[in-house]
Image (cartoon, rainbow, N blue to C red; front, side, top):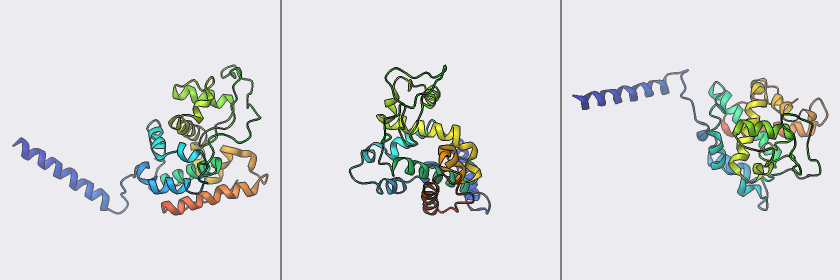
Length: 230
């Protein structure tokens, strides 16, 4: 009897899944991993020259490992909203890293140290751009490190030597600073990441970011929405 009861329960679950998957208007949520396929991820890296150090540093496995610390990423609402957030994230990452080419900022002459009692700069350390979203400034390294349980103020280089930590800092920044404006359109994410390009200051760069976004939306089968520029 117990075996029969288990079989009936399993059948009920299977029938329920079938109904939810086929009834119009009811869509089973896709996982981020199923959207960010190896083909999608590697397609970005393939746009970078073979000599780029980032091509071996940035991997899909590292991204998915980092994602486990941010389960709400790519779960913004509707299936289309989720895909747009993923497309926006990778568009900004692609622009910041040259399609996963660069791990660190090219110009390292600026230490990006600002006065802060909570996150003071460590002696001899620089906080120039590192990682998928080029984390910059001591206050961001400090806040990211606090959230992730890491000492990034004293060891900022960890962002450019540990690929999982690198992606974690990018996801932390995204979820903390960018996520609140994602539904306002891609242009709002550009303003959140580098507002200095907006309002006609660097229209070519703003457009380049938007072009990446629309390309990724096309690959993911979703419309890009409105407000693509800033």
